[in-house]
Length: 345
Length: 272
Image 1 (tube, helix red, strand yellow):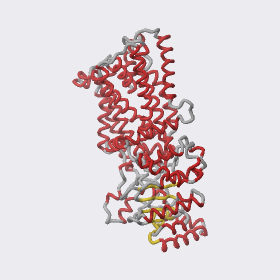
Image 2: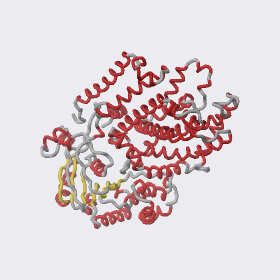
Image 3: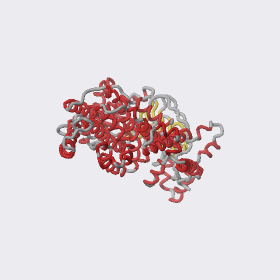
Image 4: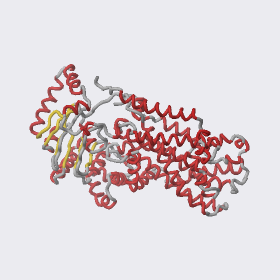
């Protein structure tokens, strides 16, 4: 979690782990979804629903753990960006290309996409998108995404953008997907929507799965929880937050699940400092650069320089460079050993 | 190393998409302009005319440079500089500008700086074509030296991509970086050897160290290389030292760049 600009900068430092506060949006979430399932994900705001969907649709990589997705995913969310300077038609082509459609496919589906976006959009399809109303923009974005042909459809509150007629169209389209046997993951705060579309529901709170099961059993309990939550005193709510957030570490999760392979509990490539191979290559490059630079500045030909390296850079300097590199490496590994601070501590 | 490889592979895998999306970029930038894309060529042409007038006619008084008229000497380096400048400034903003568009979809973010590169490259080819005609008029003839062009072109692309990867990531976090870069490019213009011939300067010749320090920067390497290629004044393999310096700088930039880029990518949502 980055609270300030300097925290952001620290996270990019290439050496060692940085000492910024960590926040686990999801803590040891584990579930299976099978082909043809339509799964609703419910929970309070900030519970980790969107993070989960973003991870499943591979927009953000998980910090640790194993994710296996068989098939193409497609996420539909409200904030689907369009380029305001381009016309509606150009935006459709661009979006479709970014999603990996071929030119012939795009032309085939163009009319369908425009029709689906509604009458207001049809009238303005060859005008720049910046002249559209916000509702029209969302509808156009939604329409593009809904005409892809993914195996797994992930919907992040996208059905709440349009007016009532558009909402019905959206639900009809979802049902069509469902009838085709596609897998659907659906996030919504409207429980009636969830009930209408989903057979299975996962209830997530504070990054943990509270309950998982058929919609008929989970939804009433979640509804009950929502109703009582507001009646609880501030202290009680704070207690719930503290309890669910406290003491999460990968090590504990590993101890709690001794049967799972240990690779599930390791941090992934993205979050690691330089590997030692990379460090070695970097070191060599720095040495080569320093050496050649020195020879260049002194105007000594390379062959002479290689034959008498000490004449180019005196021993003192070589040791100096080595010390700086060693200090960087040691500093990096020392900072890694420092304990990770936790946001709720 | 794995990270660098990962980032580079993404570029080649998405080569077609990069090219096509670059075109939409161009359309969107000049959508409100009367002359549209013509500006992308018109703007550097006006620049060339200004520098030719100031340096070629007034300062150097039509003196020959490496045996050619000043305009023929200026062009190969100048168009390379113009391309590098607009690419570096464009790339540093590219990630910020497109963040909204790609934040909610599965898209290889590392290709965004390449998109700016592909976009600017279209202008470069145009400018190269135009300047070749002008150079021909001023007595530059094709020679074997022109065969080095692919090498220096590769140098230029590698340098620009590595720079783009580093600067675009940093700009997302610290917007000031783009402004800083803008000022740095102003300085770089004068010390990259685009408009001055350092070799022919009587004052500088007394201090060879200053020239050597200037010659270290990668901009100089590419610009001087392009000049050697088109004017036929030297081969790239004659200066191994400069080559080693250039490529080790690129290597460092690329490794560090892909590392911070991947770190950035895992926290993409947090930064924007």
